[in-house]
Length: 356
Image (cartoon, rainbow, N blue to C red; front, side, top):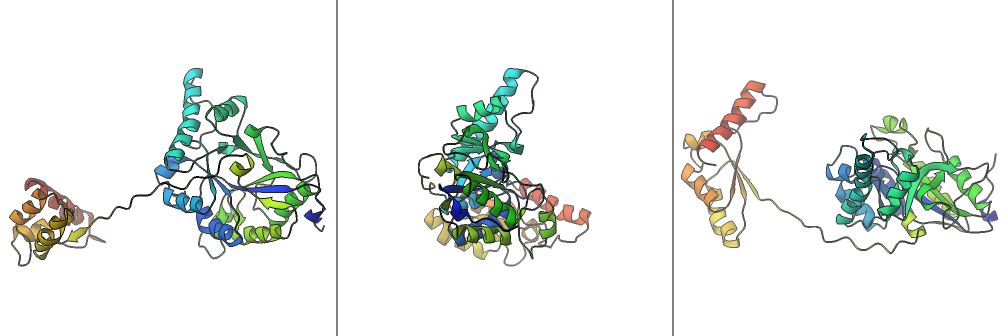
């Protein structure tokens, strides 16, 4: 059935692209598409997953890139815990835990410079208590999953929304998101008085990536080519715009990220005598310290071109770090475990014995 053109809308329609959980696939494959079409999105993340560099989830440097592009970073709880589950039999302790999940998460994201103002409920689970927590933690909205239809009212949220702490999104099946589904959702909203249409995405998959089939087998994934086709189509729709959730909710403009420190470590391998001169003439003269990885075996054997223990000690006394590099400067890749253990652990024991 052909899609009715959104140009029939009597009022503007605002689309918000929201991404759940902070998957790295969103950075890898959604970010280039968003940049190509010049539209912002809202990314909901859990701060402990960010801090712990959880596998498959974005690190802070990736969130920095999204934020600098003009995208919004919102909260999803410290550990992505459902706010409707029970974690402690004592009601007061349970409530305190959930408050920390939400408020502590917001505080941490703020410390990272992301100025979070909107929240998405993990698993889309909410109730009156959860909504009260999100509100009391200072968020302007809490996003659920689903609730907006293409065949019956409500087709879109009003602006401001009916309940900012149960912000609905476009309905969709558990399978892969299609271009037709997205177009139908926008068209349904646009042809029924417009309004606000948040859309939720999970994994973003790319054909040619070795994990493409696995990615497309997850819950509500989207192919990045489908996302690109959707954004291209949105450009052709009069009275349809794309805004972040915080923008629609009237949050202040995003501040710039604070300066990020850059740390450089100067590391020197093999305990060579030439490095002593570099330390004396270059590093020490500039009050810079390095890390010197030495092999205790060649030092004990007084091999030519290798530092003496007195020279290693002098480096340590000047503030430089002394680290291990195996007993005999051999590759332990593929080495039998017992031999590798001997090379690494005996080297460390000898360094400790010598006072390092």
